[in-house]
Image (tube, rainbow, N blue to C red; front, side, top):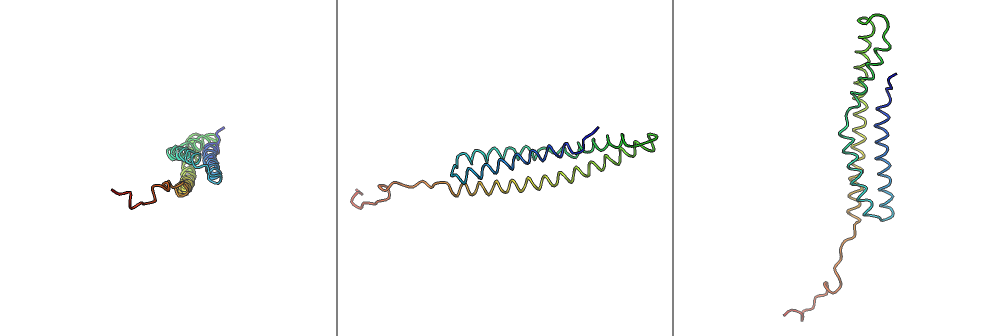
Amino acid sequence: MADLQKPIRQMEQRLGEVSREILRIEAHLRRGESRAAGARIAGARDQLRSLRGESDTPLQLLVVGSQLGLLSGGGSWLRGRLPAALLCGVGGWMYGQSILADHQRELEQLSGHLDYLEDHLSASAPVERSTPAETTSDPTARG
């Protein structure tokens, strides 16, 4: 039997992995490990890019809905199974679009949080200071 929740669980699992990665980045920032945080930010951005490219959830739910409609329709093909497959397929596609929009919003929020962490990382990066010998100006040193 078709599993209507499988594509949704897969997407939520991948979103959870990115969220856990962001928590690890925050832990690195709290400990002052800026190089590790920077590397993890790059990895999390790659994960977000790959998640944005995946938009097959509505299509998967369309197929699953159609299968459920074919299996649930009773009687003749024209009066029972085909209309049920059509209605369930359209319903699955619409539900998939709704879920995809929610996931896109969540991806945007995660991306915004990564931007914030990256800004925080660049603001807390140590500024190179010149040595005291370079800052002291000796008027007799000019020639």
